[in-house]
Amino acid sequence: GNSVTQMEGPVTLSEEAFLTINCTYTATGYPSLFWYVQYPGEGLQLLLKATKADDKGSNKGFEATYRKETTSFHLEKGSVQVSDSAVYFCALQGAQKLVFGQGTRLTINP
Amino acid sequence: AAGVIQSPRHLIKEKRETATLKCYPIPRHDTVYWYQQGPGQDPQFLISFYEKMQSDKGSIPDRFSAQQFSDYHSELNMSSLELGDSALYFCASSLRSGGEQYFGPGTRLTVT
Image (cartoon, rainbow over all chains, first blue to last red; front, side, top):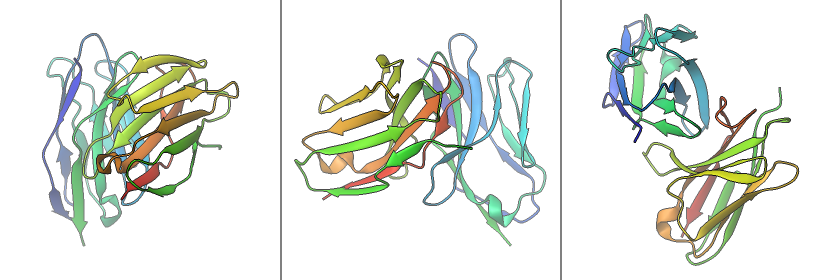
């Protein structure tokens, strides 16, 4: 079945550091890929998405490229801020349901 | 813009009690999904409905049931609650089955 594997956390960085959170997937067919962010005590917010190979999703300085050849969708940001501290989930959608990775807790120190 | 509405936001129940969670999708969205997120866990898919019919089923216990009504809102009914049912329950809706999902704020259920 479909599955998502995320880089294990937690990840702690200093403000303005470069961020990479790795995500790889296993799926049949051609799924859509997503990154969701969950701030403390809140729900899931869609951060960015890509629906086909080589698509690049971007939002709020975050980027991820759908790499079919490596089955990856790594999340990157060039300069993180304290306000980026949250849990990040990589997810894929095949026919209907979303399948999530285990989440990566990111803490940014000033 | 209107978002997915879930009620209640917080619910405390005792073991063996029942609970009903409600979800109101974004207007014109015809598909609803339910997910369960345990403490420190990733969200797990429970069940989905498209045009009032069950469209997919995940790891939903037999003690749980759900339905989608004619106005497209959905209810998740949970009986014989167990301590392990304590979790955040998310509802999401989409414009069509398999479309982009928009999440509600979740209902935090605590079973004591």
